[in-house]
Length: 125
Image (cartoon, rainbow, N blue to C red):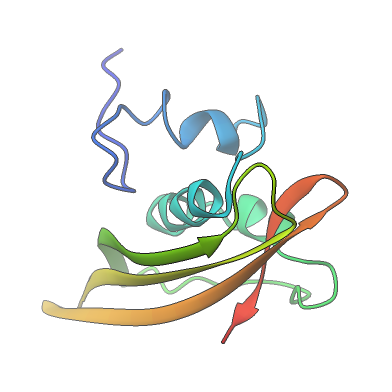
């Protein structure tokens, strides 16, 4: 089986990149890696992973993804903190998508924190 490119745009194959996080083989080591893996989860429709990597205090009860939205590209604009030595970090990004034949871009500045030793998405600033 051919390992297709990862939706997060890292240039690596999916299994080598975000797929190992989605499969639970290892946790994302940085806030940026978690952001990339969450984008890939949106692109793949993996709601279980999205909920699992959401901070307990801000996690919704359920998540319904719009199947008409296709996530096409991720641009990381800026990161602060979020490394292996930090407990908090932010990632500013642009997520490109197509919906009903129209291209769009969503820009967000997200906060991340460590919860039980793992990076989780907290909220948009």
